[in-house]
Image (cartoon, rainbow, N blue to C red; front, top):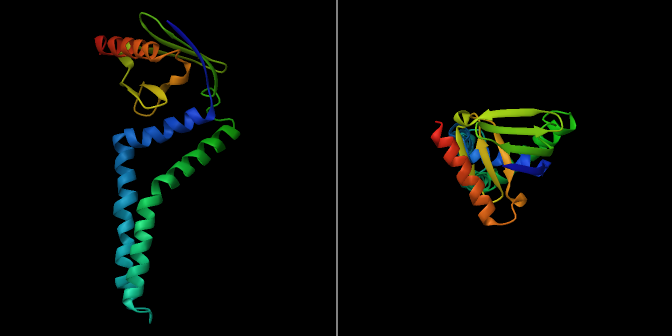
Length: 175
């Protein structure tokens, strides 16, 4: 079975954002940065009251609002950081093999992904996981990289489900 498609910058950004929520290590880091480290905002008023003439209640109110703002808007901030990082990498010529035309072949032995700049061969027994979100199917080949298959290439839901079932069946039968 052969799939021909074009990956763009947004596909790469989507994968990296998905990976933050999917990877156990990234998820833990995200949780620590969002909730635990931001607790320092709630400790800050107790320290500042010793060095400031401004009332403690003022500092407490400001720091609680700062904490709530951080917790609420941290995911948006991460998306901006990831988008900027990916854009910068692509401008510098890094990961260019990911962007562009892909010819993905599902053979009896594995996956062959041909792009303009590279060729990646993955045996089915090397597949770590197959996951999907609203826009993509990700075939993880190790903890940090995956074949990205955008859902927009499928004519209908049946075609997508057929590919997904084939990948899962081949991946499980060889693991």
